[in-house]
Image 1 (cartoon, one colour):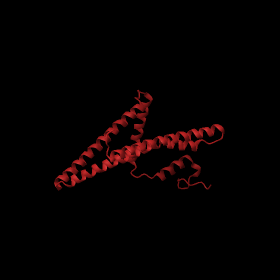
Image 2 (cartoon, one colour):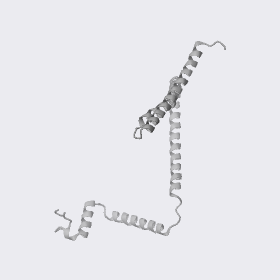
Image 3 (cartoon, rainbow, N blue to C red):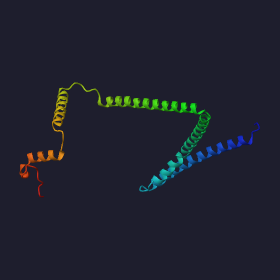
Image 4 (spheres, rainbow, N blue to C red):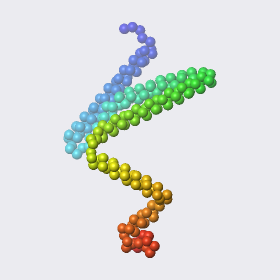
Amino acid sequence: MGRHSRGDIGRRGKQALAIAAAGGAEGLGVALIGWGNHLSAQDYNYDVVPWGFWGAFFTALPVITVAIVVVIAIAKAAAAEHRRYREWKASLPPEQRMAMELAEAAAMTAAAVAWHEHNKRVDARLSASVMGQVPFNPAHAAMKTVTADMAARSQASQAQQPTCDPAAASQRIIARHHPEHTGPDGSYRTVPW
């Protein structure tokens, strides 16, 4: 075995300690789940959930730890890269810095527009996959015609009546359908109860 520097042995020691801790956590998790199952098997009414929860926690702990370490490493690398980029951008003359900022804004705008268009295409495709292609249906065509006629009549009546008073319209409708509740002037009067 060759000679190693202290840093190399220290790094290997940390790796060995991390592997041992991961194995210990896995073993503890499995033991807790097993013990909870054992107690549950002895007494039918025994609640195994706390043992199962902590067993699953200790079983997943190494994975959670590795995920946290990876996220921290990525965040540190991204922060260092961002700092270098900002330092480089600050070293540019003002005209070049402004040109860079305009280019960045144009690139972000183009990306946002492209993403929006992509989402519209995907929404249309998904809607078509759910709704399907509607075959010709005479009743559906007649309904479209009736709806178009109603819209045209509504627009024509709105053109004839420049002001619209919803309260007066509802008063007229109620008075027409319930003549026993009309007032002397022909408007609807509220029922005393």
